[in-house]
Amino acid sequence: MDSHIPAPPTRRLSTGALKNAIDRSTPLLPPALEIDEHNYFDNNEPPEYLESMAKTAEEFVRFHSKNRIVLVTSGGTTVPLENQTVRFIDNFSAGTRGATSAEYLLENGYAVIFLHRQFSLLPYSRHYSHSTNCFLDFMEERDGKVVVDPQYQLEMLSVLRKYQHAKSQNLLLLLPFTTINQYLHTLRALSEILQPARSRALFYLAAAVSDFFVPPSKIPEHKIQSKAGGSKLTMILDPVPKFLNRLVDHWAPSAMIISFKLETDSEILLSKARQALDRYSHQLVIGNLLQTRKYEVVFVEPDLPEVWIRLSNKENADSIEIESKIIPAVIERHTAWIEKSKDTE
Ligand code: 9Z6
Image (cartoon, rainbow, N blue to C red; front, side):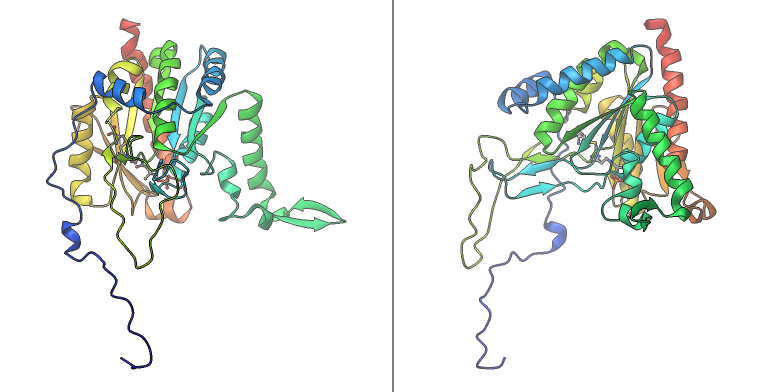
């Protein structure tokens, strides 16, 4: 070490093997009970906008009283580390799955409530987002006016027409969330608002939902100060109650419910997806791996062997979207669910 350059401060970094970083021996959290629901929602304030959002959703559901209606959740929830939030834990999701699926559901006649992470990708505008496919790259100046570059006219016209149809027919309701708490309060409220739709209601839960959060009793009010010298930050987070079974059994008992299971280890995807289905008793788990989610998913259903949906190399090369294959398979199952429910409705 060159003597005139001061030695870097000995940073007190945690050592130890990465594999011990997460204690996987802890048992799975059981599905939430009624008491867990009351504890959570009584101790975590609803978002101040919930009442007005619920009224908008009620009007939308009434407007589509004879239509199939789907609640698509999309994007990742955040876990604030301070009440005056400067730092937060985020869950990975660009919103592509949800936004693309919503388009195919709209094109198949569904009314869509799109409960999405604020600023994540949206149906239709996702084709021209601010970053990838920047919309400005599709325009040019001609005679002092902004025009769409001729080479993109057909593609943009198709997207614009679908977008305008969805809007003019009041088929798409966009509702944002940011935090896990906003998501859970809104999901429960929307589930109850959708009850009159009974089996015509479909839940397509593609959002990446936090599993741990800082409860109000433990969260600091102001920005956590990082002390000089790199002192450690230790926070104990509580598990987010597993509300999926409350949704299935109580919040939306007649609806068809589809959840997604995201893994990065292909060895455990099927077992984890099957485990979710056994724990929550809903109708379908769509499993996907982070690395291959854009070109393969697996359908895991009760008492049936799993079904893989994949893009062929040619489909991939032709930029076919896997949601164009997922959604018809979902609709086929929803139709069967509605038929089966007729005897009890
Ligand atoms: C997905 O797997 C989606 O396909 C992605 C899409 C997030 C991968 P983008 O296209 O990615 O970039 O948006 N979504 C579900 C991810 C997820 O967090 N699933 C939870 C899990 O895997 C289950 S649903 O554990 N944990 C709660 C409970 O059990 C419900 S969260 O009650």
